[in-house]
Amino acid sequence: MIKALFLLVLMHTCYSMSSQSQSLAFEFTLGNQPLEIGVKTYSKSLKDSLQIDAFRFYISSVTLFNGKDSVHSLKQTHFLIDAEKKETTKLRFSTAKEFNRISFQIGVDSTTNSTGAHGGDLDPMKGMYWSWQSGYINLKLEGSSALCPTRKNEFQFHLGGYSYPNNSLTEVSLKMPKGKEKFILIPLDSFFKEIDLPFLYSVMSPGEDATQLLKIIGDSISSER
Amino acid sequence: MKILISIISLFFISFGLGVNKESLIEIFPADFPEPTYDLEKNPLSQGAINLGRVLFYDPILSKDRSISCASCHSPYNAFAHTDHELSHGISDLIGTRNAPALFNLAWQSSFMWDGAVNHLDVQALAPLTSKSEMGEELISVISKLQNSSIYPDLFMKAFNDSVVTGEHLLKALSQFQLTLISANSKYDKVMRKEEKFTAKELTGKRLFEKNCNTCHIQPLFSNYQFKKNGLEIDSTLNDYGKFNHTKLAKDSLLFKVPSLRNLSYTFPYMHDGRFSTIREVISHYTNGITDKTAISEELKEPISLTSDEKTDLVAFLLTLNDKEFVFNKKHHYPLEILKIN
Image 1 (cartoon, rainbow over the protein chains, first blue to last red):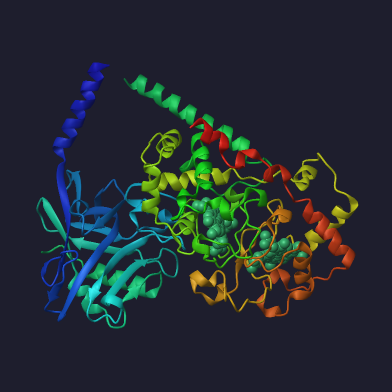
Image 2 (image 1 turned 135 degrees about the vertical axis):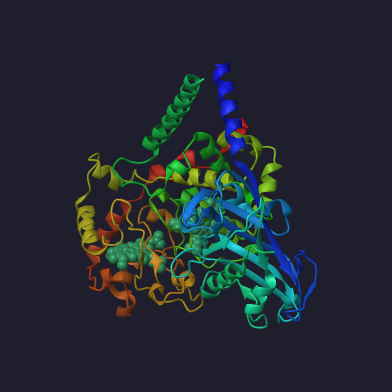
């Protein structure tokens, strides 16, 4: 039995040696600087000072491609990325395969949305679940800007929706440069450039707006720093 | 090594199956259809059922510790609420709907009068976090439970983990509620050939099958679909049912077809509790439907019943009362569990 155990350990070591541990880091910017939660920041391109108080979202089904062939899928299917918690912004995995493209979804798929309570990053205690109507909030973006005609100039975007006609799950596919550390960049300036804050400052339920706003964020993502 | 692993897993598998099978047989009646709740994702165990039952009766779930699930879903009312038309939450904020009875939930695939909730597990999030109900955020409920003297142990017994999580809290509540099965009414006993209907009940059954069985389908007495049964909108509430969350015109005024079991315990009736007697409900179906365009297909043919026929129909509906269910101690306040702990 001890022999068998030894063999098992040995096999495992060999296997891990051939595959390479890699990481995928999410980075966020506002006004061409790294995003700081809770800090008012001037954006030249927006000609506005904004403060972001929360930026959280789900990433699911992360898959690596080499050309057209999928070569590896991350075992954990859903990750909750929180710009305020550094440890959540880096996905680690190991693979021996080469890859030059990556695909994932922003949000939680409809099957997961309709199969009851889940744990880990999907636990409703993470605060990313609507209560009066079933469904995960795919992305939360909250903060303030002088442009918002609201109390304390606040804006609030809770974006989600998993069923027809408001399925907001957003596909992202990115070319990946070579290198052990890879980045996925979300520039919030591009998001705010696309929306009209004086008129659109609160989206709190599934619908066309939520789906559209998630698409805008999806389109702004790149892998180049 | 391999053999050892196989033996261990065999032990676990057979043990797991044993628990499942036993509880399946115990709780799901043979003459009911297949339940829709997927027990593989939340296998029933006595530990988790007990935990769910303690939680259901504990006001610790509400912000000011004044109200529990059972405050609105009383066991003696087949887990409905009879005092008020519209259920009361903390600080006397009045909810906008009549608290429905809770039983045979394993056969439902959507919840609430308008179907806004898609799974039993996540239903409890609505009363736990909606301001007009229990007014409590999930994360603070969890820390209250973690710091209590009884819950870490109950979670340990239920899930082999004393750390309280949202997932386990919700799954335990589901487990207790899944055991709320009503299948021992006179109707069920007649179907199992243990008892016989009276002549009036039998006439009532025929009238029921002619007029009502398209939506209130036997043996659950609901198809659990969403229909318009011709209720005029109450302009003080403006509740459009399923439309409220789908925003699709075709869903306007659609409400979930409720089961007709245990009606003697669950008055008042309808989503807003507008009728207080079964006879009033029947009169609604015979004379109360004014707008023929605002009803579902199944009710397009007018229903006409003589006074005697109404009495017979009521007699049949009363055979759906399940006293054994309502007075089943296993569903009541969990005194014996709390004593052990």
